[in-house]
Image 1 (spheres, rainbow, N blue to C red):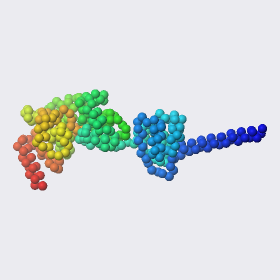
Image 2: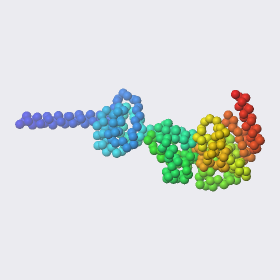
Image 3: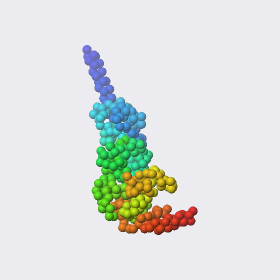
Image 4: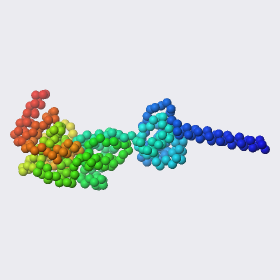
Length: 345
C-alpha cells in the first residue's frame, strides 16, 4: 500500500517537475531574446487586416520568433490578439516575443520621410509617393480629381492641384491615399496663409484666394530667383488689368506645358497652338486650376506684387529674367538672348 502511495507521489512529483520545466521554457521563449548574439535589424511589413496566425507566420519566416505556437498562445492568452497594429516594423533579432508584442501593441511603425518640392504638380507627387512605396500612383491621381471625395475634406474645386502643400512629411507604409491627400491639404490650410474664398484687392483687381493661388502656381513655375517673384507677379497682373483683350493672355509657357504634360524639351510653335484650357497663349485670363503646388514665397508674391509697368519677360539660362514694358523692348531682349546663346555655342 505504501509502495502504491509512493508511486503515485513520484508520478505527481514528475508531473509537477515537467510542468515547471514546460513553464520555465515557455517563460524563456517569451521573455528571452530569439538570438542572443545577433544585433542585426529586420524590417517586416504586417499587412492591414492580418490575423494572429498570419502575423506569427510573417515573424517566423523572417527569423524573428522560433515558435509560432508559443507566440500565438502568449498573445492570445494575454488578451493582446486584437491590439496588434499593422504597418512596417523594424525588429532587432535580440528582441523577445514579449518585446515584439509590446512594440506592435504600441504601433511603433517605421515613418518614411517624404519631401514634396515646391512647384510639384499632382503628377509629380503621385510619382514621388509611388517610388517610396507609400501610395499607388493611379489611385492617388484618381482621388485628387474625384470631386465627390474632395468635397468630404472641404475642397470644392475640380482638382486638388495647388492645395497639396509642398513640405516634408512623415508617412507610414500602408497609409491610404485619402489620408495622404487630407494631410497635405490640412498643411496647406495651416501654412499657405491664403483664404481661398476671400476676396482680395490686389494691384487694383478683386481676386478670390483661389485665383491668387492659380497665379501663384504660375509664378512658381516661371521663377528661379526668389527676388524676382514679385516682379514676375507684376507682369501677370499688368496683363490681367490691360484693356486690350490680346494683352489679357498671360502667354505663360508653364501653363502650356501643364496642359500638354510636356515637362521637358523645347515647346514648339505647334505646341503653342494646341487648343487647351491651360494654353494661356489662346485663353484670356487664368487657367481653370493651379498648375502646380506653389510654396509660400510664390503665394506671397501673388498677394504682394511689385509695382511696375512690365508686361513681358525673357528668362536666361542662369534663371534671371529681363523685364520689358513694350513689345519692342521685349523683342530686343529675345534677340539679345538668341545672340548670346548662339555665341556660347
